[in-house]
Image 1 (tube, rainbow, N blue to C red):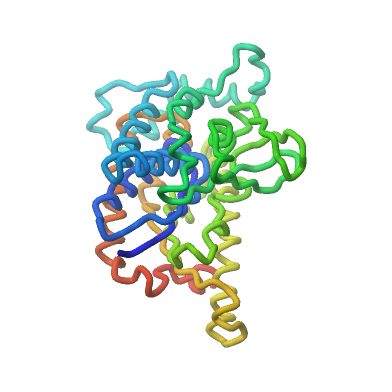
Image 2: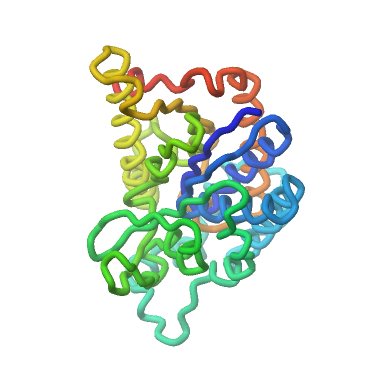
Amino acid sequence: MKRINLALQGGGAHGAFTWGVLDRFLDEDDIEIAAITGTSAGALNGAAFKSGMVHAGRDGARANLNGLWALMGAVGDMRLANWMQTIEPSQIAQAMEYSLPFSIGDAWSRMVSPYAYGPFYRNPLEPVVDQFNFGEICADEGPELFVCATCVRSGKIRVFTGEEISTDAILASACLPSLFQAVEIYDPKTDRTEAYWDGGYTGNPALYPLFNNDLPDDVVIVNINPLERDEVPKTPQQIQNRINEISFNSSLFRELRAISFVQRLLSEGKLNAGEMNRVLVHMIADDALMNDLSVATKTVPNPIVLHKLKEAGRAAADGFLAAHKTDLGQRSTVDLPEMFG
């Protein structure tokens, strides 16, 4: 049995790509998910996966993920028509980005605070997250789960785990401040109620919870924010989208750079092997597809795009397993020195 950890990025509706990755991994009876760290959509996927595994094993995890994304496809009020079934994701993305409803909604979010709605405000993700079974999510059985959020006051990351994970913790992890009111949760370390925003600002996702000695060495990162974009963004939406991608990738890069540094010290004999954990880094991504999508497909969960993302996630995971399954437990498949060279 190969044991691995998963690190699931946030990226709004593009988290359906991770749905596909997880769905494909569930086909591998000889791979066990020991722990999951997730932010935003990654936290939603991780919670659904763990709850399902505790309830009914692999079939339960698959059913929970399917149920989650069926609900996510119904969130929002900017649904497009069925004629879009035959259109490529890039064309759907462009149509959505330049549509009048999206343009109005985008402009509105930049001019109006989410606090302006007063008693009429409700986080649209709340009814989705409320359907989770938190007895299963917080259980000792199944993979360990870590949910990342950003403390507004201190700017520091908070990682929720075990019984700390709740509806509010997951909503905090997915709380984009231009769209949602900050989520307030008591923090026993500061002995005060803290406000939280999206975890992507400080950990997308945080890797360090996976470095415990009782967890395996392999960390498989499911990346849904493109690391590179060849074309310079020019429209306001494209510029803002790339700013968010760079911001949300920066925390991951910092941790990967630290891992690369430690690995170099180990290889040069400047650290003893027992002094630091060995971390084997792997990554599953489809930057070509994500470059074809946009901020519109990230913020508006169109069912056609969701299923295309799931298919792409399954295909990417299938390619990774075909090429690197035998590398699990043996070596990293991400060349960190090359990435930071």
